Image 1 (tube, rainbow, N blue to C red):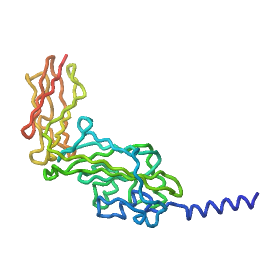
Image 2 (image 1 turned 30 degrees about the horizontal axis):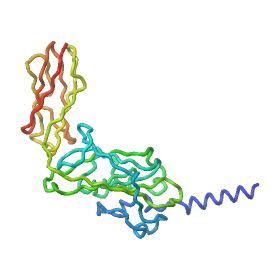
Image 3 (image 1 turned 180 degrees about the vertical axis):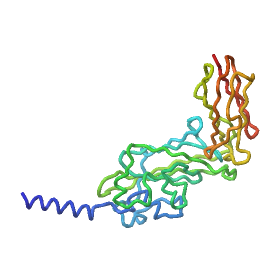
Image 4 (image 1 turned 60 degrees about the horizontal axis):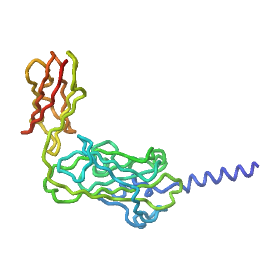
Length: 283
């Protein structure tokens, strides 16, 4: 029995030392190998020279869902300067991935490209992690969502933005191919707009409602013309402060509208030649 236990222990030690998946097996480390070639993905087994994987295989169960950041509506095309939510659904949980966008940049913190000058790449693990650390940060579920911002560059109109993703399940030994899929969206001309939301449209006296203003399909607002103008009519029913809320880097401005007396107030919002209105009722 003692000899058997010793043999098992030795086998486990050897596996820990030699069965670990080489770093090229993980999409997060592939970003480091590809370096500044920001749209490069492994295409052949030669690209994964020290990995046990064969060339990536197409898997239609790896899919993409794209929605506007402001309304959550599904879209079939992209706009210069537009903000979106890209969801990637994977064929299995407990894995590792990298997603690449041709033109759009990912603005959230989970960037494998954030350290190598490629904001169009996103991973579930930081590329600076060592191989043993990589095993500790697999994707917890079967999907991931990233904020995507398209460059405010009208020369992109008429081109394609391609989303590509590679995925590997988190199996010790790393046998089997990488899985990948892609989806293309046309970049089209879209009309700029102001999209607003409030957390309450029916108020009692002294109650407040937060008004969020998002500028969509336009270049990110910048100083000194980065403030919207908010007015309320008739005067004295609702007052919104600040009256000139500034846009943050995510193209959202926020103000608080407080109910002063009963009535119906029309809150007007203006920015960059655009106008929209919210109605607040005070009872």
